[in-house]
Length: 213
Length: 313
Image (cartoon, rainbow over all chains, first blue to last red):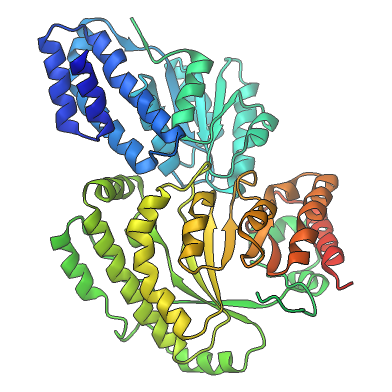
């Protein structure tokens, strides 16, 4: 348990080397890779999310924590594969047509990956059909839409409408600087989050947790 | 932006894009000239200084900063257009509002134009704050030298710091980091503006920078212009209550409402504008440039209602 605390502490201190050492030590102790993943790495990111909610962490701190977590995952990945642990939920993400901004969207993608989801990032300026086709081809359950400008809110609305009109039932998560909960409701989105850590919580609520066995 | 008795409440049109005008022509607008005649606005000009030269590769260490520092010469020829002298003469005889854009803000000064550099700067801010501090400081000094050359020739009405730093729910960096890495680098400019008695110092920001407000006020900014905002977070009425009448405000009208129905527009204007105007130091304006999906009819209604509500009693 102390070693697990080391992993969590290292991630919260943005210490990549410390995280790697912590994961290696747990593996050497014979701890199940799933336990290290859930009780160490993902638990640390959940804790980082709480720090964000409390205004202790901001975006740079979350990014650094995620980087430390990823360094731990890279050590753990072969062990997870051997244990048959794979990402359960697939999420397609992108910035809507007409919007060239991707920093917020990339943050959300990074946090979703850290939570164990398989994330297909379509980038920016994405056509509505692009979201729907990719989701269908990859069996995604959730599409996450981002917009930075008020001028592209109408594009977000059009994209949501296109997704809802398709035959495949897909959940929609929206966010971005000018997006409000009221706007999300108006365009028929299933979820809204004002920030990247909240997006993980909403995604879990909409399609379940990230990993399955 | 003084607590005086203006003959009217000003309106700064930020410019109607051509694609919007094209859409409106199909909805009954005869010409751009007609629009300007029907809804006159107060002319506002913004002098844009040449920003610091962009390095081919943005520095990521103190050693790499030296080459960048050498390129920051505010007196370098070619930094001003050939017509500069003519423009200065025009500004001396102007009867419109003249602003000077003095700084482009933290992220652009650090070369953040894409995700890769954003991630690099986030890492630098945490692991090597001394580098970020120095990089910002030398650009702040450069901006002050550039601004001084203008202020020695022209009297301006306001200085504008542009700070695209907000996310949906909060600024991208903490107030503590902002006060540590960014605000001290604005000191040379703020001192310069004080020496030149520039009364209005505008913090033009985007999205939700609410948490930075106490910091910027402490450092001497006295006017907020929040663009592309999450209206729930940046309600000017609430900001006024919290920070008082001395905080000048530009904007505050939810652009998104103009897409909706007239009732929503009426509610937005009637609820927000009169109390802010009554307090003074407020220029009502939508929080972004009007876009194509705003029906012409709605724009007419918005401008007429604004004119009516802000008319002298």
